[in-house]
Image (cartoon, rainbow, N blue to C red; front, side):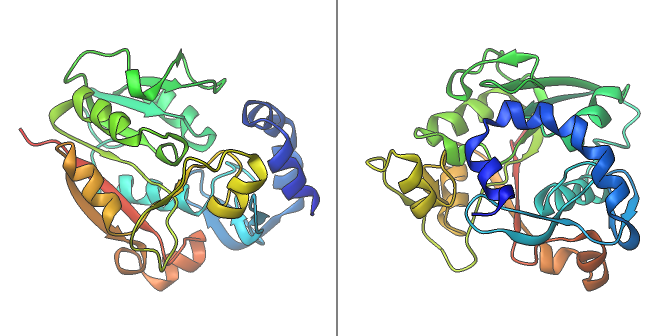
Length: 258
């Protein structure tokens, strides 16, 4: 096992977040170049770093923001298709399991009323269970909840909570791990050990692989209108290469009708 995989599979995520603040300056210096760009901070590098719990993916982790493919595609989508980062009016944003690469940007944005929530992340101001969100109905204009639901056995209840706290007319992004050829969700709650979860679901704390079809059906069953944004159609080949995006990714957009 490589040192990267060993660290990812043995060090708790809250500690990884804390350690990253000390490692980033060194990575930025080591990977100086101009072949790829992190669109979140506009820094250029000779390449992105490898990353992965089960199998290392080459050229995916940004040395500066520590963003992955999914973070960069999400950022570009938000820039191109939403008012979140452009609006002059106040936007109430709920960010569940806040990613480091976005945290400081959203937190400093004066037009965003930024609420962060997670079970145990040091970046979250409010800690708790996503299936029991401590917010009133119709509170948030936008919800970001990415790579969270695959950790939750009762994902339907979590989806219902997201729907409950979103304002009518609101929208959100709920990215989850999907395999390119998997159409139906695979889950087995009898699989409980870290080793077996890595084998079956790709990560020690995952409980399912979502299907590229029925994941959207699950979201729609709680009331959301969904949209599939295909990275290989939404972005140009040049953008995919320059920003290190995943051509197989689908960005799941959710909306709550007025």
